[in-house]
Image (cartoon, rainbow, N blue to C red; front, side):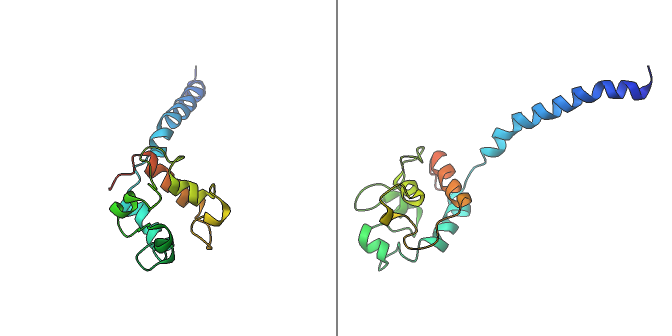
Length: 132
C-alpha cells in the first residue's frame, strides 16, 4: 500500500474527528460569560440612560434608574425588571422584545435594540445577572 493510499484512508477519520471536536466546543463558545460592566452597561449608557435617570421621562414614569447595577436590580415602582436566571420572564426582556403592550416597547419611541444587543441582555440574565 502506498503512502498516498494510506493518507486517503485516514482522511475520513480525521474529518470526522474535526467535526466532533467542533460540535463539542460549540456549546463552550456559546456560553461565554457576559459582563455587566463590559457588555451590558455600555448598551444602557448609549440607548437607555437619556430617559432612565432622575429627571428623565422614563424615570419619572416608572421609577427605573439605570445609572448603576444596583439601581437596575432595584427595579421600578411597579416591580423588578430582572429575574436572575430567567430572561424570558424578566420585565426588561419583555419590554425590549416588545411583548408588553406596544406603547411600552423599549427604547420607547426610538430605534429597537439590535438582535445582538437583545441576545447579550438575555445571556447576561440567564447567567444570573451578575455585577461583573
